[in-house]
Picture 1: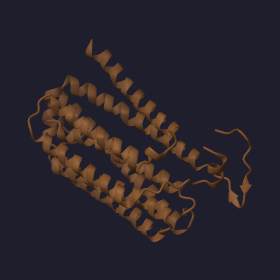
Picture 2 (picture 1 turned 60 degrees about the vertical axis):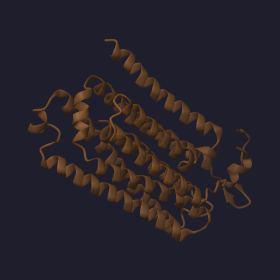
Picture 3 (picture 1 turned 180 degrees about the horizontal axis):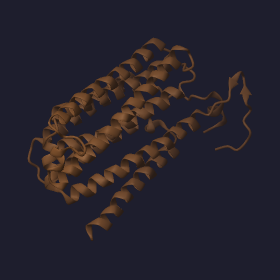
Picture 4 (picture 1 turned 135 degrees about the vertical axis):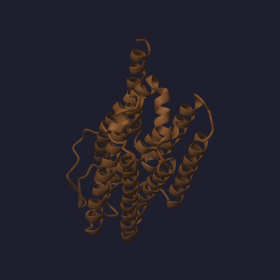
Length: 100
Length: 209
């Protein structure tokens, strides 16, 4: 973050249309995969595979569509902290709930 | 980060801090994350305590409608992301078209949601309905969470579409331009968040059976 960047406002990181379309195709593919897997009896693995695929999709949207990849490191750290806080919420809830 | 005073005007540029604006938007998105995060925690706990009933409930949802809506939202995320590239390249008309397509896709999502909910209502499934209350506790919880979480998400889709409509007006009036497009970026960030929330809602409600 230099003075230069402040004064000129936008520091253009232009992402080409092609790369967005590629990521979109990947997201569509992952959606097809997760729907196809839901038709198979995976037992307890169902929720794990579904959430893993959803996380990969979320990661792609955050990194490419939401430009986190080209943002300042501070942004990525913020998002990481927010995600970890949510994870702590979920874990602590289960520590409470599972041992009642 | 420098603490040195930055002149308000420099070579005719009005001082802006676009990075700060984007950070403000991200901070707002974190509050959204906590809003939905709380609901995901409730979902996780009730699913843990009523696994069989949650499976039965999810079998009653139409996977096809859910899949189509997922693809609609992913595509709308693509078009809004591309609209930033278009404005960066000075292609105002194409940018307007792409944001317009995004809003159209938001409406497609809502129409699908309308038919989906109408069908649920017609078979007597809505909060506090006699049909639902006659079912086991776990299914009441499942459908309660289904209506609240997808309903709150749909509300976000409506708000996002309104925000994007305002942004279209900004683009057409040259308030958002090749050199100043942080408002479009903020609107797009909101729209992508709505997409990410659906990316998690979709498998949790439609697929895990």
